[in-house]
Structure formats: C-alpha cells, structure tokens
Amino acid sequence: MIIYLIKIQGTEKIPDYIQIRDKDFNLIAYFRMNNPKRSLTQCHLMDKMEEIIRAAEKLTYGKIQKLML
Image 1 (cartoon, one colour):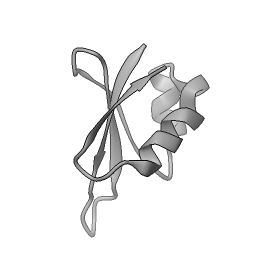
Image 2: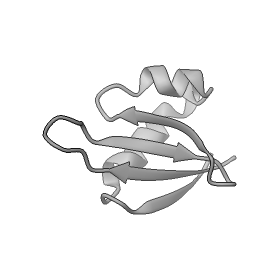
Image 3: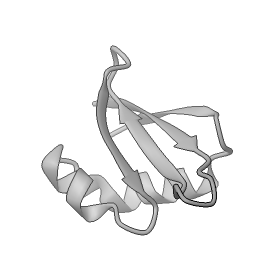
Image 4: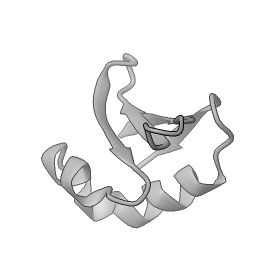
C-alpha cells in the first residue's frame, strides 16, 4: 500500500495536522499529531500507526512524503 503524508502548519486557533492521501492523491484521513487514533481507526490504518507517526514527526511543513506500508 502506498500513501502520502503531508504536514500542515496550524495557526493560533487551529492545531498542526497530518493529511494522509492514497496513490491517486485522494484524501483518506487527517489528524492532529496529539490524537491520531480515531482517524487512523476509521481509515483502517491503526495497525500502521507507529510507522505513520514516526514518519509524520520527521516531516517538514508543506512537504509530501511517500510511505510504503
């Protein structure tokens, strides 16, 4: 499975969040870094949560990272 991660910088009122997109670049999930469980459970990626979080923590804002799961 190929997914793409994008880290979006928030503002004072809106927190930073991560977008997860599929190989066709369709949005399949987005979550705040402090609460990924709900979104990852809904898109059936809970078993890959640690790998996704590790990659997301290293991301620079606005950059896209391809992740092979």
